[in-house]
Image 1 (cartoon, rainbow, N blue to C red):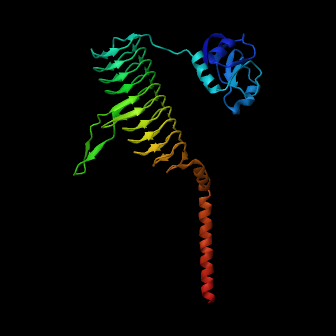
Image 2 (cartoon, rainbow, N blue to C red; image 1 turned 90 degrees about the vertical axis):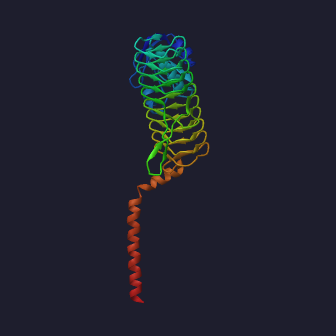
Length: 350
């Protein structure tokens, strides 16, 4: 539940760009789920599973789709109800934003460039030649390496490490304990079987409007760059290998792992625990269901599942057959025994 000062429903409709259907003079003061909403609440319907709850809701008003069933209260109708709800969260939320300024318990090199209105929390370290753009918030315990550049209006949460020479664009959010620019996994084998580390000296670039989840690791390559393009959203516990390119508006869910030198094109969706081999290309708009293993390049527009990844429809048919395999095995064994008996009987009668 999110709280704020009372707002007229007409004002909420205007700010959310929704069509008001009903009394706009009623007051709403919080956003909450449809099953627990009370008078004074604004609620929402974004799934048909909650239509029955809509019919009996006690909410003062509801956000819903243009074609949704009518509610027993004033309605804010829109073609994109999920987007309206997302904006309503911001409208009714009480975001805690630290005041601008640099905490005295920081370690900042003399030649660091800080933009106007930045907020630098305690125990932050910023290396020589680094820069932080205007209005960016750096929470306590962050390390920003030498030569790193962070754009304007970013939020870098506690215990993040932004390594040397990493470039981060505007309006980027990095959640707690992510590591941007860690060494790629590169070793050359010596004649005696031991391994020599390949220096990882390439670049890492996060373009504008990227979001990085908690405990994400984005590796730098030995040569070249790892690049996350504008608008990509990366969930917690994701591993991006060295030299990977992630396309615009791509979504990577929790525990995705992408091996080095792979290209993920624009608007790809990889669900939880998807694994991607090195040196492959995942075509634009591809969707992969959870725990898919992508071992080869995938054409644009694919919908894939399984290991190795195949078309989702084919995988679903195969998965439905798995549970029948034990019975099929018994049936085949019985048929083999019967065939052997018939062959033995035939031999004895000849």
